[in-house]
Image 1 (cartoon, rainbow, N blue to C red):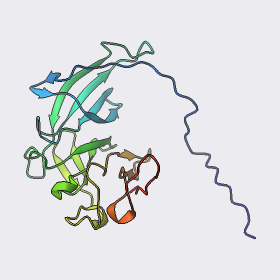
Image 2: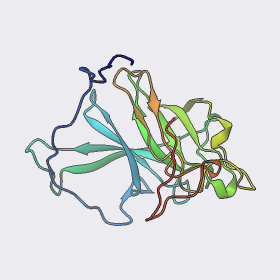
Image 3: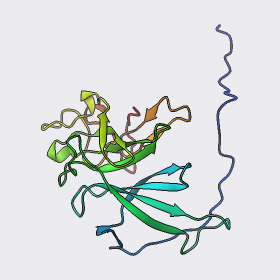
Image 4: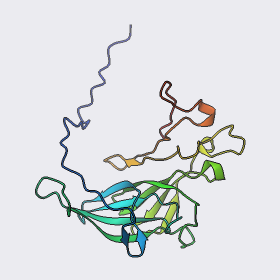
Length: 207
């Protein structure tokens, strides 16, 4: 019999409890610098500046794909009306330096690196055969590089493999040592099985 191996990791960080600090709502159609604020799908905190970068999940359909500088004041220990402000908008630019075209991406996840760059994930669009991506951007919004995405994730016209529509790279996070990025699909790839429903789960891939 193999010896017992402990899986306890003394370096693991765990959350012991959560405390609700409040909520703030914003009206539909809120404008900043001639863009419509809303659909903030991901947040990344910049400790050096004390601001958050909030990624809009607009598919460049209302305004070009973008993220916002967001100030959040929790100095009194609660989150109340007036504690959140949208301060600046930054348009994402593709590798040619142009705003992303309408419906050419579906931005969802955002992380800040120690090199002061941003990684952003896009779900793509399975119906239009637009591949999902995880790309690196400068803090000014310019695309710097593209991470390779295995072919198994890319949509196919006959739905024999790849992502399902609106069920791809929704999430994005980075480990504290900055060595690994993680993203995950929201539902089974076509080759992995059926979609999840109220009675049955599905396989999802974490990359």
